[in-house]
Amino acid sequence: MTQVERLLFLIDYLLHENNQAETIHIPTKDIQRKRLLRSLMNIRPPKTVSREFLEVQDAYLQEECAKKGIISLSDISPAGPGIYLWQGDITRLSVDAIVNAANSALLGCFHPCHGCIDNAIHSASGVQLRLECSHIMEKQKMEEPTGKAKITNAYNLPCRYILHTVGPIVNGAVTRQDQALLSDCYRSCLELATACQLKSIAFCCISTGEFHFPNETAAGIAIQTVQEYQKKQENCPEVVFNVFKDNDYKIYKQLLEYDTDTAFHRGSAQKNGDG
Image (cartoon, rainbow, N blue to C red):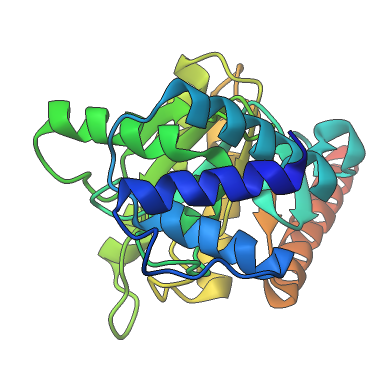
C-alpha cells in the first residue's frame, strides 16, 4: 500500500464503523484527508479494532513520524547536568518516555484536531493508546487525581513509553496548592520513570495551555522540582524540557542559564573560601 492508499483505507474503515460512509464526503486534497482521519480518530471511543486496521494504521503513522524527523537525545545540546532544552513537536522525540498533559478522564482529547498536546500525542500514537488508557481507568474506578502519573506504551511514537499526568487548573491567581500540585506532577513522573528504570524523559509544559498556569511560574517550578529530584536520586533519568512556543523557549533558556551561572559563581566562591 502507498501512504495515500493507507490514508483512504483508514478513513473508509472509520466512516463505516460509525455508519457515516454515506454522509461524509472524503476530500480530494491530502491535507484535508489527514485532518479528517485525525478527527475520526479523535472522536472514536476506546474499543477494539480489526488487526488489518491496526497493521495499516501503524504503517501509516510510522511513515508520517519518519517524515517529520525523529530527534534523539544525542541531537540535543545539554542545558545543564542531566538537563536538555528542545523546542519542537514532542511526538518526534526518541527518548524512553514523553510526558502527556492529560485530563482527569485520562482518555485523551475527544475534540477533533484540537491543538492540545493530549490530542497530538493520541493522534500520533494510534487508537491503541486510548484503549489502554481505558483499561487503566476501568481498574482504577475513579478519575485520575491531579499530580499523579500513569505509564502506558507509546505504540507508533519514537519514544518507548508515555507518562500521563493531570496538572492543576488555574482559575484566577495561582495558589500555593496550585504550585504544590504542579510540582507533584513533575515529581510523580520522575518517580515513576525511576521505578521503571527509564534513562530519559521529556516533559511538556504541564498546565500552561488549556489549564492556564502562568508560563514563567510553571517553568520555575518545573526546573526546581527536577533539579531537587536529580540531587537526591542517583538513578534519575536525564530530562528534556520540551517547549513548543517561542515564549516558553525564551523563559526556559533564561532560567536555565541563570541557574548555570549561579552554580558557577557559587562554586568559584567556595573555592576561594567565600562560601
